[in-house]
Image (cartoon, rainbow, N blue to C red; front, side, top):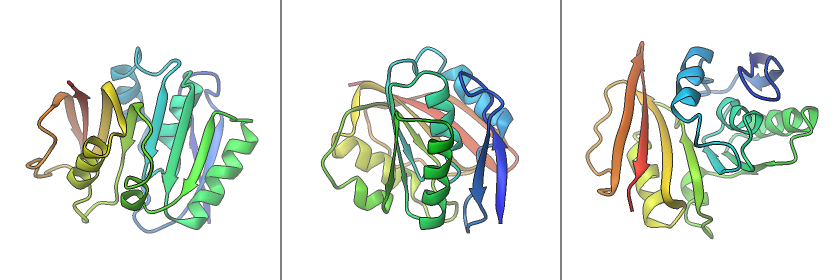
Length: 184
């Protein structure tokens, strides 16, 4: 079964995206995306963005709609990747590249320095801190990159990269959403 969500800003505002029902796939709600992109309003245009655990693609498509130069969406689920590709084709989104891969495996590959990274890992698997560490340790981030992390509300942040500082943090229900900046 396919579900729908709406892009909330930029060139594709009000365009709908389809996404599949898949275990652990929870699209970032519109009100949370609005907050996140308000936080990032001066950080998207012309930038290289990485959307890890892309799922519905809501964050990556929103970034592309708002002027990101390129967006790489990494998702393990084949059906979700199929929807991402269909949505990119429907929007003529040539700046979006979809990679079907396990995120942790992908982050051991050849790095590219991204300006903005979005992480929305499946809940209950303690992947947020591990993914953040791989981004930092393996050279995936530009000098002052912004990193958005969506997690369960009460995550243990011990083990986060020492050179990251938290800029913003909010919660909605059982979901916490956080913006970090790489300081070196």
